[in-house]
Length: 150
Image (cartoon, rainbow, N blue to C red; front, side, top):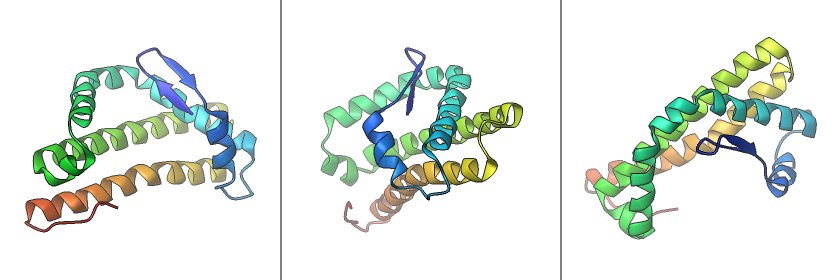
């Protein structure tokens, strides 16, 4: 599921939902998965003004990614620092969306908390792991060590 903050709508990818449901424990039903991530995406919508405020920088980072190969991005400290910044923005927006989703769930009680907390942790994990991987490469680059891109 995703929130398009420019056009202000929540969308979903049925193939991704079918794939994702296979990755989560049996105690989480597809209904709980969809409810939880719907709350999360609505949580992004609640934060739309902040997302719109990041648009200029997001466009700059996107244009940089279009202008340089992945190898160039990971060998140039300035370019890699832009990727790190993007990760940090994404994590902040994800955490805010989850906080908003939690408030909505407290108010409306749509998802049991065990499912909600599991999916929150699971959902944030990918963002955090990508950030940590790239930050380790960045540290190695600025400290004169070369790291492999995995």
